[in-house]
Image (cartoon, one colour):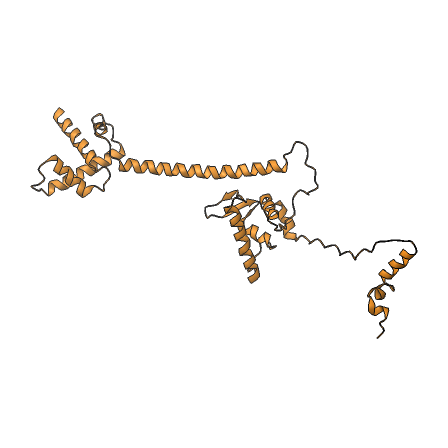
Length: 275
């Protein structure tokens, strides 16, 4: 069956002639041109949403806000994201958390509830490094010339890293100081004073009140001895037996320890004998 030209090529319908035939005809006449395939239409640049334009002025975002931005959702939206949106939001949060864990992304602050915040520029650079789109346009166009006397991007990045590192070290120092203070307090409470220290009795005879900790030791010791006096026992026939019974019965009280009681008893006897 004979086919019409329009059935052989769509160019007959679009232009009234077939391009390949025209090229051959021109070549026969000494005019040589190359056949260029149809150029693909240029991809349209996605329009930046209004919320993204307004977000250019914001310098820091929380992890949840950054996750919404990565999936193209207004971080200040209200309501349900939808099933697909919630799944994408979860994946974005997981990607950000893993970036922090691996050191690829550093938070600038973490509040008391563990919520992290990040510099907008750090989020943009991380997203571009992993092939994700950060839809908030940059504050300074890429073609802008850096004025003389201003820091370049590398310097600003280094300053941000140093700021984050300084914040992290400050938190660590504060935590270490707190732990050191707790350890010192626990050591003071658990460690009984040496006998030679116990002999340095407070200056009660000069009208000076005893140290609160020492006063607690004195009162606990006196209270324990009063209890023992009210319940006499035949086996309580020596100073060592008294100390042993006091420690056994009241050893959980502050200042009640074998060495402490030995020192107190020795000082008390010396005071009484010197009067």
